[in-house]
Image (cartoon, rainbow, N blue to C red):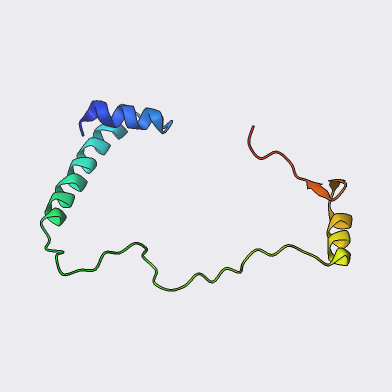
Length: 94
């Protein structure tokens, strides 16, 4: 990547870089790419494909609908704004 490519990427990421920061980034990025080219030469033919860095099972529970009307009414009672059996939440995105 050259200076123009990095400037375009910074603009897309809405980063307001000074000229000094941009020049520093050009040098650092060149070093990273050089290191990656060294890593590209590593023999990985005897390694298993990795799809996730953490091995194991998901520890999250399954979502289950609340069928107990008492729990549902308690939840609705604790909510700020409701409409029937729905809970209104504030808008997150503009």
